Image 1: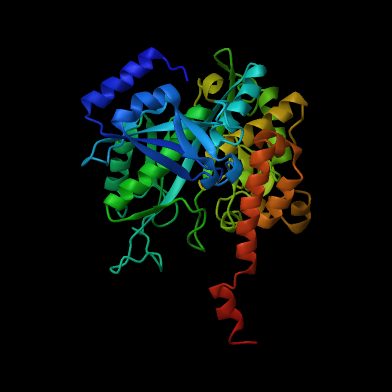
Image 2: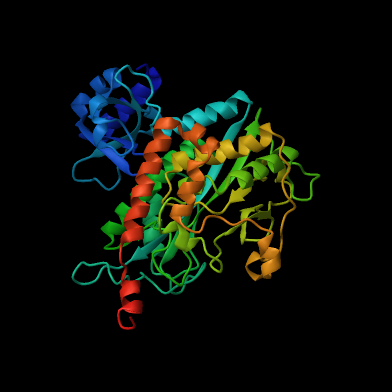
Amino acid sequence: MAHDHEKIKKVAEIIKARNVEFINLQFTDIMGMVKSVGIPTAQWDDVLDHGMWFDGSSVQGFARIAESDMLLHPDLDTFAVVPWDTDVPTARVICDAHMPTDEPFSGDPRYILKRALAEAAKLGYEYFTGPELEFFLFKPHANGQLLPLMPHDQAGYFDVSTDMAHTVRRQMVTALGTFGINVEALHHEVAVGQHEIDFKYDRALRTADNAVTLRLTLKAIAQRNGLYCTFMPKPVSGINGNGMHTHQSLWKGGKNIFADPNDEYGLSPTAKSFIAGQLKHAREMSAVIAPLVNSYKRLVPGYEAPVYISWARTNRSALIRIPKVSPGRVTTASRIELRCPDPSANPYLAFAAMLMAGLDGIKNNLAAPAPNEEDLYHLDHAALAKLKAMPGSLGEAIEEMKASELVKATLGEHAFERYIEGRTQEWDEYRINVSEWELERYLPVY
């Protein structure tokens, strides 16, 4: 595989200067789990020239056993030294999966996003995203067990005085910086033990890489501080869950084409058609952007999580919110925020589905419905009956996805079938499991 000689030289200089001994070749399976193949640095040149063979049949959603041999090719732009592996200096690089013929593997999540971005490029667009990944920090018990869960602190939104994790968050930001991730804000979130670190809005492939790296990094830094970090959508009932609100815009010729300073919402007709496309396809892409059984315990009224398919400027109960922009920045900062994704999603697949849904709205010149600025959680039943809601369970979301031509075309037939197969297995396991809640509720009564 051809590489830029300047990039090869730069990586070689890093390896030498930092005495790197091992390099982890990273990629994600279809569910978004990070996989890695480690090599001694002595093998690096060979990997650059020929790629690294791996067994695709052992990776969820990849090849069948009869066609298991696959190749990894590193993306040199993602090469970085791992900051917490100080005993044995180690680097990591994110890779693309290829077939033995050296063609890109159509079921590689990173390739699926690249394919969607190529569709946008045909129309002259660049897709920018800015995901906000919320997470919880929990303290293990003296015996090392996590359950029952103990939040790391009792602080609330933007709190300082009782926020015990401010030092840990700063360590996380420093570690993210070594991976080239530019953090813009860090703060305590609404729920006890809940936090958020936001990084710079960028082209979607880079932000997807960054989201995957952030999840790994935060877990590693938390562990070094004797804590457990989780991006599980709803780890604690009765309080807010973890979202991955995703800011989005399209750019063309160096200009933000979502912006219109003369519009009430600062949005162009193109932006409103993009909104219309995402609202139209929200239910059918739900299993991709909110992929777990647990995701649908977050998507319930009352916890700032969107349930109803609508859009608005200030209404945080709407599925799509239009963030306010500082005066004078409308032409560059105008964007839309999709609020239903959560950080358990595979960011490559999530961004691909979101982009293709929005592009469908643009291609078909769809008109966005009227914005709904009322608090949707407090509407009466008659008003709510006029609104469509997101699926109420993973099972319902899977059925919606099965019927979606758009999601099938976005993922490709192989990934589409494997993804539905994996999520259906998860749903079936949950559906037939007898929970503690059921035992406590029914055992003494019936």
